[in-house]
Amino acid sequence: MDGNALAKRVRMDVKKQAARLDAPPGLAVIIVGHNPASEVYVAHKEKDCARCGIVSHTYRLGEEAGQEKLPALIHRLNNQPDIHGILVQLPLPGGYGAEAVLQAIAPEKDVDAFHTVTAGKFYLNKGPTFLPCTPAGVMELLDAYAIDPRGKHAVVVGHSNIVGKPMAMMLLQRDATVTICHIHTADLAMHTRMADILVCAVGKAGLITAGMVKPGAVVIDVGINRDGNKICGDVDFDAVGKIASHITPVPGGVGPMTRAMLMKNTLEAAKNIATR
Ligand code: NAP
Image (cartoon, rainbow, N blue to C red; front, side):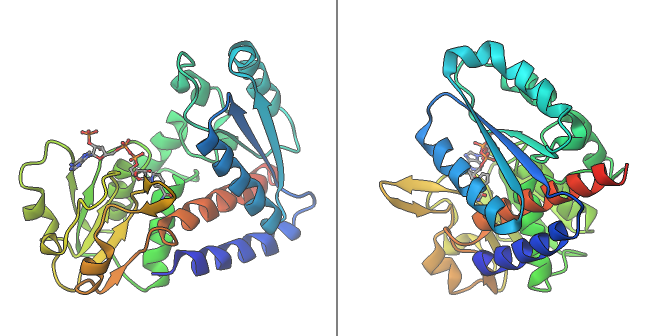
């Protein structure tokens, strides 16, 4: 499944819709301290914004000064009309209390979908709200390849708040029967072998081998594992690719879709704010 190609289509659609607004959508990205991986992610987001006609505003705060300045910056951006989406790049330096920081973002600008109000609306299916980007990107991939979750057995490995749990909920909301597996699951393979749709979001290279996958299954690999300059997912791509009906590569599968969904959420935020 080609996440790069689909992400490009999503970005083109966002660009078209953004051009119809009176003012371009604005995305504020806040980065605190010096984390090389975060710098790479922020650079990608800036590039995506430029491709979509979204104005990106990057705010860099020093690790120490940020403790004091971050709440005031978020407060200002919450009230700034040309900013429609706000995200704080995680992880924050130690001692920052990420939870309080994320809760300070106005829910109508919470394009990463980490606020409890956003999550509450999503889990109760009482929208409109923003959808968490990674699982929303997976759902777009399934739709693009005409894979309907209804009536299928979906198995999600990993139960984090940002990927596993919302992934399971999205599949449930589309009428799949869902099993959620995690570190304490006894006999992981017994569950994964029953999956029509298998989503792995753990962060452990080689976790899913061919013997753990039902022939013909759809396999979505969310994991990102780094070995020097090489990146791979959680799934043994070569072996599993021979028996799966569909499989996402890493890189080039879920990653670009996650970023595309952030652009889509920022567009939605701008549209919502414009029509208030
Ligand atoms: P996380 O918060 O570390 O969650 C990992 C999950 O995997 C936890 O629920 C953990 O269970 C479970 N787990 C750990 N070892 C396991 C095992 N051996 N068997 C079964 N479950 C196991 O990570 P995350 O934020 O959800 O991200 C997961 C992976 O996806 C990472 O590699 C991350 O880099 C990647 N990711 C990719 C994208 C993308 O756009 N492609 C976006 C976000 C994340 P416990 O909590 O019980 O230990």
